[in-house]
Image (cartoon, rainbow, N blue to C red):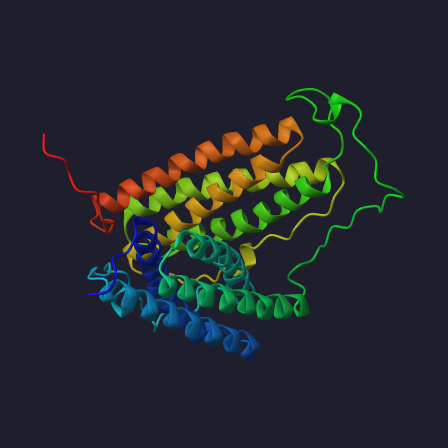
Length: 326
């Protein structure tokens, strides 16, 4: 048995294993349904990366005497199901996940003390960044980053002299600054993709309970998107196109209930984290208030998603500290 894993190491390996077993199945399905050869090629790279991450996480857990979680298998996917998503949204979701992955792997490496775990996450981070570069190149070629928002170039850097720069919740508002625009645009893209996945899950699930849960999430995501878009519109900034046309009318489910709920829980937690980052960088009070209340709403939905996973027996338990004798 290898050297014991710390709480941080086992947590990160546990989550890496589960998340990437899902990625293997989802990506394999995307490869079978994508129509553009360039998209298929980049998905094959994504599949190789996910398989590497699964194998190494499993080995590190086993060598330390830890059982690996159940994760996902071929039983959670119907690879014969027709296309549910068009190529553009497939690229967008992979782009968002590669952004999240690069951050998660960097943090996981910084939290590890065992050199083999650190090397694993360094390799994951390096490969994910390279994959993200490939995605950006292809998405730029296909115009998926349009519209791009460009701001007037100031003649010189000015200092902020008035407290009114941060504004109030209800008082007059200055134009958005570049940081606020970046955070709003990033979250529009993220929440729009989440909304379309929820819409597709409503379309394919046979469970009334899950359909109602997904409808609630869809309503939340739609409201958040509208609020973010209204912030851009107030300053006359370009609007991002809707992704509604990127979902087909197929009602054949490629995914198990377990996989759909886990996917939504991951979307919810990563979006809450993005909102938290946005709040920490906001200088305009009213925008910060918007993100704060929306984060609270989404956090509650994420908690209810987790409770539903527990109810249905889908949640693998992380290792616990030793229970003290009473």
